[in-house]
Amino acid sequence: METYEIVSVGEKLKRLRKKYKVKQEALAGDEITRNLISQIEHNKVRLTENSARIMLQNLKQICNKRNIEVCEDIDYLMEDEKAQAVKIVDKYIDELKKLSTYKGDNFLSKLAQTEEFLADLQLKYKKIEVFNLAGDYFLSNSDFYKSALYYEKARALMEVDADKDAMILVLRKLSKVYPYIGQYEKTVAVSEYALENFKDMDEKYYCIFIYNSVLGYLRLEKYEKALDKIHILEKIIKITDVERYSDILIHKTYCLSYLNRYDETLETCYKILDMLQDKDGMRYIVAMVNVCGVYDKLKDYASARKVMKIIFDKLKKFNDNDFYVAEVYFEMGKILHRSLKEFNKAKECYIKALNACEKKPDYYLTKEIATRLIELYTELENPEDRKEVKEKILELELKEGKVDTKIW
Image 1 (cartoon, one colour):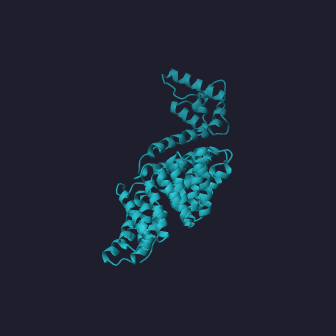
Image 2: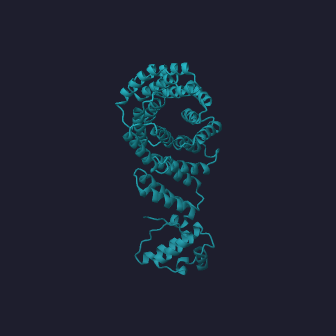
Image 3: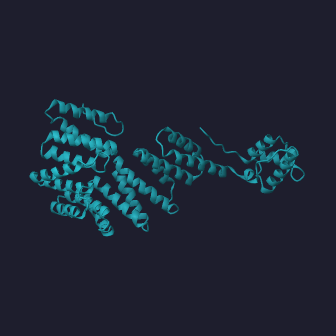
């Protein structure tokens, strides 16, 4: 593994003399003293540009007589430790960027080497760049805890006024990562902090922070606060931007449903369904899921079953990698389990939801599904079904850091 070294000006001068086998007296010539060169080599006296120029001229004259070419120039001699450190860190950063596209230990070992090199250096902005790179790498590999850790390191070095643009970017990343690890208070906190401190930010980022705060409030079951934020977004996002607008309305239906405002929930759901052109798309299915959920809460199980049949028919064209698949199967499983008492079908939905979570890691959702599976486990009458559920739960327990369900 390639390593880099910072060399003091005095040490560089000493190495230069040894490389070309030149004594201090010869390098000094008639214009400076041997004692000055000695003090520079011991880093007791600062090298001036004039002294460096004289020494290089004398060195070249000596080497010309020996038919030796001198490769070093005055910039090499004058470059101090900080300038060298910046160049070295830039090399590390370039290497990290190249390695970040590959999985494996190479990026991790290079990152550790870079952090060790940077540890005692006062290079704030280079550290921020490295921490952001590391956060992006871990995010792309679904290691959300480490991703959040490195984004937090970057944020800790920033100043609100001096590093405005960089701060907005790292806060945006944190507001995206925190929900994946169940830190919803932090999701709301960073989003609200950004909205409060950067009132003139670009509208795109403004909407992102409001949207992410909605996600946080929803998970914290603060539905009124989530609705307040959604109302702000409704005024900004144009209805013609169908996908973004429907995403906002979908979250609105969650809030209204949890607040038992079922008529408004259904009205909003059908507004989404009418708006969407792709009647087989995932957003359409999610809206149908919310309709099914309302019928379930109203105990209109006949209507819930009809909608559920449509949902399952439409889900056939999707695989586990598609966004929202895990959530859809989980919601269907809950209705089948709790309300319709169709335990075997509920089991199938829960397990499909877990399989989808493995493709798109979501620790919070995984834990929720596992909890429901544990409840279902005792209710299944068929020993083979009980065995299958038990094995799935045990499999989850072995995945360190994702679930913590001790039931045996």
